[in-house]
Length: 210
Length: 210
DNA sequence: TTTGGTATCACATTTTCGTGTTAAGTAATC
DNA sequence: GATTACTTAACACGAAAATGTGATACCAAA
View 1 (cartoon, each protein chain N blue to C red):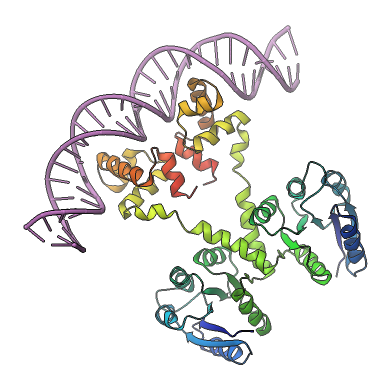
View 2 (cartoon, each protein chain N blue to C red; view 1 turned 30 degrees about the vertical axis):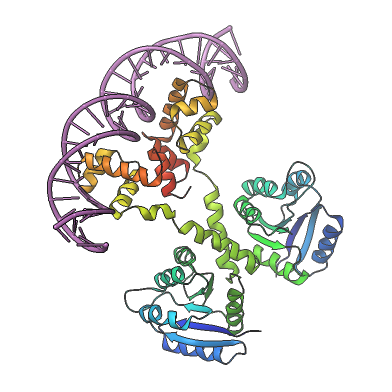
């Protein structure tokens, strides 16, 4: 069992110290640096190159933890980041994951579970509570269901819209579907009416749920 | 602790029977139905209305487990579905989640963890292994990073492209950005050249990473 | 100082798109 | 048997987009 080096970015002194003690007091873990703001972390972490960085969301100064992760992750893609926060809202979760966090756990997590999560993220997992996971899964399910306005389209119209979305010219669509260009025009017209749009781009945007 | 009713859809007789025994032999769980194919499950589950349905991927007959989930989830949004499979590939995971599965666990999971996962998914969580979660998280990170070809665009060009993507006419873009329509034309031309496209829709598709 | 990249504007031409109107054949519904 | 919805098609017109060519100005790097 190799030793996992950990950096902590957390502005609350008590929490920061408690986590440092926990990590340094556990076999197989070493805290190599603690920071109370994003700017210092951004400056020092490149020197320390920890395996895992624990990141708080709210930090004093202009930069929050997510921005800090985004910058570091770009430079050091192999470094693992884990959000450690009190927030459970969708926005913050998705932002953190997009920025490059692999784990997302709440501060109320027990010390034992925290250590386990650190090891987990280091070994290629994505530790997160089952509730957090449900938020992430819900995102997929929401994405999957298309705009209900599209249901009003006939199957032929959907076919045409799909061709439109791929950027084909009318004449290309006509030849792809073996119909006249005038018929394409007609279908497009009907599609626009049903979707209440006046241009191809707007129609495609609705098609992709934007 | 209320009793969780469970249905099992799994074609392998041994596995199906073993799970049924496990569930019926555990306090707080009851197996209310087992099925060896999707068609029968689709027909019977509406009568049983279990809290949780465990679903295998490969099933005999025309329908697989994902299609089965998709149909049932549309009818019974409150029913919880958990994939129980041997597959760990991204495609199957994402398909299952989009279809409406809330949990995704592997067949090698221990009996104790399986029971825990069933309770978890019933209580609003999304049980999945840390490795599975990483796949899902990776999807977010991939989505977040834009097409590298866009980096070749100047900031002004990105601004124009963003306006294009919103469906504005050239003259609207011109007035939004306080420039001449001829300048818009020129920028659009340069954007198309850099992105190697010949139409607005293709450019927008690249902008959105399609 | 020159060169290269960026942003700006102009004119001309061709192609494509969006809209209006009309209408025939088919399939499903009532 | 009439009605309704869908698919197909044609013609015309103006608007918008795409293409080609050229030009000026600014700024920063070579």
